[in-house]
Image 1 (spheres, rainbow, N blue to C red):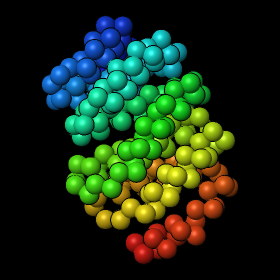
Image 2 (cartoon, one colour; image 1 turned 30 degrees about the vertical axis):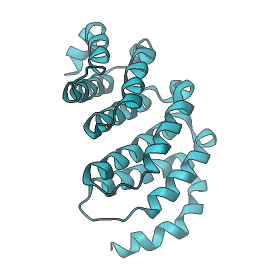
Image 3 (tube, rainbow, N blue to C red; image 1 turned 90 degrees about the vertical axis):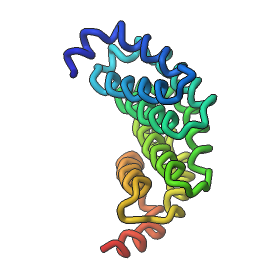
Length: 192
């Protein structure tokens, strides 16, 4: 509830950030998910006060965890934070982008790993949206190349994430997105 989050953010965010470090993976994943919900409801001017705390909690857990549920929840929270902060996210972009590009380069085909890679694509596109075309261009090229090489399955979480990420990347890149069309269009036409 927006009113609840706006009223209690000072108590909620520190507790949820601390819970992201919980040794029980399910607790950490739930805390990251709850943090995402709070982030989505707060205004940028409120979030800027908590950005460092939230990022330290999320990135710290992301670097120490191999639990897919925790990683998915963290990527969703990071994406929400990038979207909410837009232009104020530039200071954190480089560190996060390196980590996310490492996730998408993995080729594990287990269902949970595929979902994780899809969420990483989504998070990358949100980070790109937050920093703009010039800064995002190198990562956009690497991300698009990887997304285009991913097998597409009609009812697959990763495919849906890829679709949404491509839409965002297209918006960020504007006319420069045209360089990806020769590789993208055959796949799109095959689904029609």
